[in-house]
Amino acid sequence: MPGATPSLIAAQVDRFVKVFAAFVQEARNAVADAALNPELAGTPQFQSWRDRVLPLLEQKNALVQQALSAFQAGDAGPILIQAEDKRGLAKDMDGFPLTFAGPDHAEALQTLRTSVVRSAWQLCQTAGIP
Image (cartoon, rainbow, N blue to C red):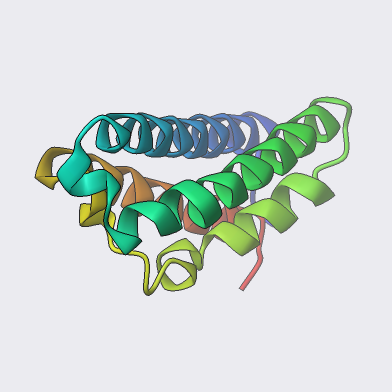
């Protein structure tokens, strides 16, 4: 990894993993809160998040956690693959409005999603991935 120190890469991996986990947790919280509100729970946007988006995010989080374990064992490949993938998270989520659970959750999801993309981009840049 050109110009990257092990401690810099480790710090960026840690940030990436933590911010992605926080994004997934906020998605869980938003789905749980929206489920309690009949006006929100009856919308197609909520149902998409509950039935499609959240399960997919849970699977992706499991892959990120596995990649972290591989990184800790000395293999950076899997975490870099996950970071490359998450650089496109905002685009991948086109068509799934963040507003499904109200404005507070939408703001938190937007902030965290941006942080995921930014941390993934920074990790890839440090690792020399265009």
